[in-house]
Amino acid sequence: MKGEVTIRGYQPGDEHAILQTFNLVFREVCGPGFVDRTLEQWRWQYLENPVGQRMSLAVADDGTVVSQYAGVPVLADSPKGPLIFVHCVDSMTHPDWRAGLKRPGMFVVTGLPFSAHSRRIDDAVLYGFPVDVAFRIGTRYLEYQFLRVIDFLIRDVALPPIEKPAAITLERVPTIPDDIGVLHDVVRTEKHLLLRRDHRYLHWRYVSNPARADYELWTARANGALRGFLVLKPGSGLAPEAATIADWMCSEHDEAARDALLHVACVRAREENKLRLMTVFPEWSVEWRALAERGFQKTPSANWLERRLVYLITGSQLDLPTLETKWWYALGDSDLA
Image 1 (cartoon, rainbow, N blue to C red):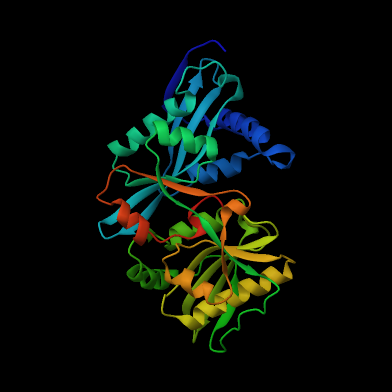
Image 2: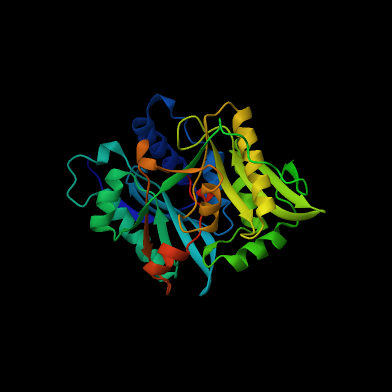
């Protein structure tokens, strides 16, 4: 294809051309089951994100978005203070611009300015879960660093549900509870490095989300005090016939609240006629050990589609050992849930 291409950031109104290319590319990749992304979904993810957006575009003379490298910035709390992590998502290249291009290609041409911009503005870490092709190109040209292959924790729904402690009251709620900040402060003091799960973030992630009907929000209380918060995605998961624990807030030392949240997750998976209940936590975490003791089995994602977590430190004093052993996350920290 002839014509000049301009590499630049997002400008208001670009979303229409972005969506046109996005839906064209992902219809091709995902097949007939793909549902086109809507303008509402795009605006939520990029324009309504309270931390902003990151985007590098290659735009042809006729306005076609030839390539995109994009990310969703999120606040993180760390021993170094508040940081911005950027979850890299939605990278794509228009099929008409793939063949015949000189290496390294449009994916890299749009990706390099993206990471350079993050360095200029002191974003701390870029991270993502690239598909095989993007992983190979990214490690060669874009400084992707491999952190780990993500293993799932999976519990067979046929197992007896975990018992709910009598002292805990469970409730499905329509929105983020007003006192989530109290629980957030408890969790934050226990974790070395994690995304900030305050009211603003959780409301944007799960309530303002156009896909909010996919999620169930559950609270665990004792004598009125919020002891646990669960985001459940009962209808789907990364493993076949699975329900998903998408997000989780509970003190590491609160076994009663933990068991109550796991109880309702097991019950809802069974009610939805799923075969499995799945989630993701770091393997060194308290949550991983607790779930393993309650019937969850370590299961390689490669049984279905291997998920690799990659990172690039762009503007902080964090190092690889810290990310390997201190960065706590749940599946909802990605776009995989």
